[in-house]
Image 1: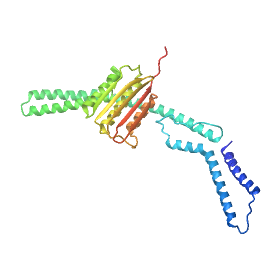
Image 2: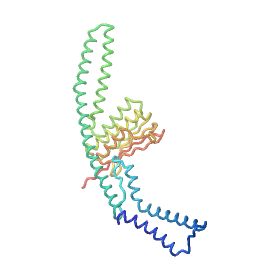
Image 3: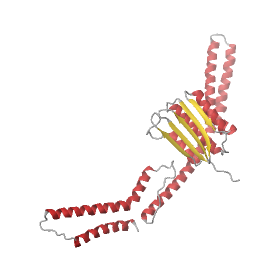
Image 4: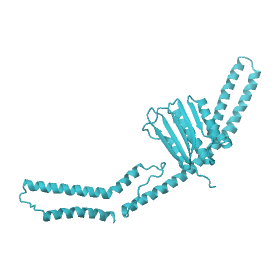
Length: 317
């Protein structure tokens, strides 16, 4: 039955019931209307309106659920669907909306994969240029400063040596940026070594006390999954160091059954009800890339927990 005929039938039931009551009830209307008759008419009208509103509410309830889902749907949180029951225009509308969500989620995942792949390629290019151009130029400057300092007399020698130290510090910073842009340890030694190097670097260059618990018995993961796990850990540590005002952060990587779970927990100020920033949205896009689930929980003055759960397919014997 279409939505039009359902609403028509509901109103017909209410009006028919009211007509039957008027025909068979021992109620008459005088001219002028007396008080008791007016009370009966008002009560009857109220009953009709309440019955009509209740029936319409029941009939239009699926549209209300659909409207609420439309206002809250987020393509970075896939799987939001309405139950598809019955037939008719409303059920068909819900099925069409669910199909549209599925198509949009697939297109968003595809476009995110292209964007993130291009982003990683650009990071590799920038890292290579920093290493080959800036790094080598600064190394040449260091050697020139050393030769000049060895041949100079005081106080010029001291100033040249000070310039050496500044240049050496800048070169170390360039190398650190290269490692962040292109995690060579991840490609050469694997995820555990890369996360160990990452947490050590954050503990060295920030005020955070980093505790890591990394399960060495992880199953074999493809390169894209390892890169997503690494980038999510990197972004969570960056947020803890820059925005959370945290003193301690814990990084856990565990293999639990058919899942690999990465958890980063800090003891900072939390985000409360603040809107998610670009960093967390980027982590969600990376999670979609490998079919993983990202959960971010935070309470004011109670820290933030970032948990990435990656399903692992068991190999058939």
